[in-house]
Length: 227
Ligand SMILES: *Cc1c(COP(=O)(O)O)cnc(C)c1O
Image (cartoon, rainbow, N blue to C red):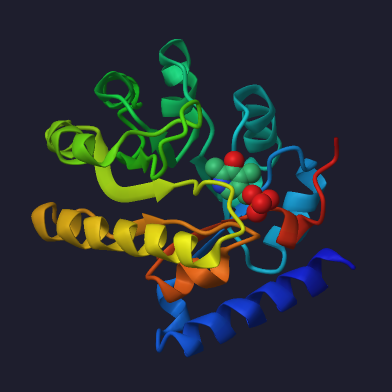
């Protein structure tokens, strides 16, 4: 299957899920997760109108951002971020969705070049008890949001979550529903918040039904990732 066909099928599935949920499909943004995909595939997809891309690995991402700078793409960093790597992120990306410590947001704000608009940030939330997946627990969201909200060169846009691996659809739905409730609460307290980033290739339809505003899709768009 080629990329255009995959994109069409994905758009159809998004529309169907939105309809089922009684939502306007235009309220759901698609982030194309292009990690490990060659720049040429990104260029091809951009030709079909997809302009927002997510990357996990810094060195790989910065090379592609340079190669594709003629396209005016919007780049989201969605990987684990180390504090000594914040400058290159602040200089190259438009969004960072994996904020799980105040120090990362503070450094990004300080290091954001003055000639670029404020950097958009999402707090990464860990919904399950599993450790090592990144993200903060629910109790820590509002204190961190309060700190980010006061920083001059970043905008708090919302929450991102990577759900636990489970085949239990009801459990998944409960977890998405809980995220949506927290997102609504956050939105009512911080006026810049408008983004709930949840749902990937395996679960985006469920995420749309439960109120996601941004789905992050890799495999269903590009096909399986090269090893
Ligand atoms: C890889 C990745 C995705 C996309 O996963 P697919 O299953 O390929 O859709 C989404 N979000 C994050 C944070 C990722 O690392």
